[in-house]
Amino acid sequence: IAEMTHGYTGADLAALAKEAAMSALRRFIKSGKIDLNKPIPAEVLKELKVTMADFLEAMKYIQPSLIREIYIEVPEVHWDDIGGLEEAKQQLREAVEWPLKYPEVFEQMGIRPPKGILLFGPPGTGKTLLAKAAATESGANFIAVRGPEVLSKWVGESEKAIRQIFRRARQVAPTIIFFDEIDAIAPARGMRHDTSGVTDRIVNQLLTEMDGIEPLQHVVVIAATNRPDILDPALLRPGRFDRLIYVPPPDKKARLEILRIHTRKMPLADDVDLEKIAEKTEGYTGADLEAVCREAAMIAVREAFKKNKKPTTTVVKMEHFEKALKAVQPSLTPEDIRRYERLARELKRMV
Ligand code: ADP
Image (tube, rainbow, N blue to C red; front, side):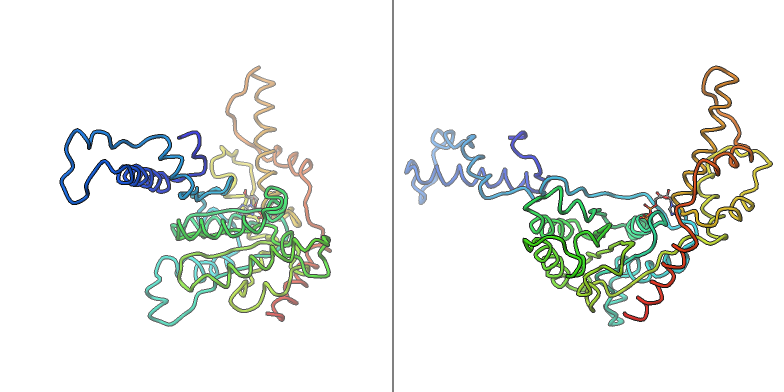
């Protein structure tokens, strides 16, 4: 039975056992061996047994709550693991953390928290981190779904997958559903490549599910994209993703914070000047800066290896960072940054 119940949760298995017992009881009553108006003699009662057939019968009614591969995570990212992005953090606190943690306040104040929030900005700037931190800090479960995955992993079943994701989210609420690269499943009509109508149906399913979330039902949807301009505008209507949060590339101050976060556990030599590194890393995203720190540490370890003939812990020096900066190039050009700023201004005007 254990082998046959992939995707069943603990609650599903409890329900399954109960249903199997009911099936046995129904068989027993149908067999005519007992008279329901009289106490059942002990030797007859001994024949009342739950069989394998009862379990198989029960499986027809009790289906697994999980379709394959909807993972519920409990992330461990805190607000202070994220450098910069003060405004985005504050907005998420108010729009997600407070309503999930103190629903009664919002109810009594008559404030309807948003059901959907769209984070947009260049790749590697902390959108996923923000969504995870919102979950951690609200004590919510987290279901992460990558847009392209909805199409590839659940071929022919994408709408069902969307339905199941929301169903699962409601079951384990409070839950944050995070749709990364949402543009892959909900591009604007003119941008759709398929002629089969699959995208239409997925977008409609997503909108239906979002419209169906009752306020304060403790399910919040956060989506992320770096192409907000190609999204289906239906997604941005009131009651859907009606809160837009721009996640910009880090400025110097934010870069310094990010560097501090990613060197927290590193033994740094006295000559390491993180401020100078922050100064020199225009165009580096959070992900790039993390790579710089990792690379600097690896260069230091490699150097120590050469000396000691085995890997040893060692301090990371400024020269290691300088080498790492040559190895890791910035993802964003000044033109990219200007383009995102422009897009942010245009979208703010739209919503
Ligand atoms: P996005 O979702 O915007 O593409 P992620 O949140 O996945 O970016 O970031 C990728 C990685 O880069 C993170 O796991 C983290 O290590 C690092 N990172 C990105 N932005 C930040 C930030 N603002 N503060 C700290 N680390 C960051």
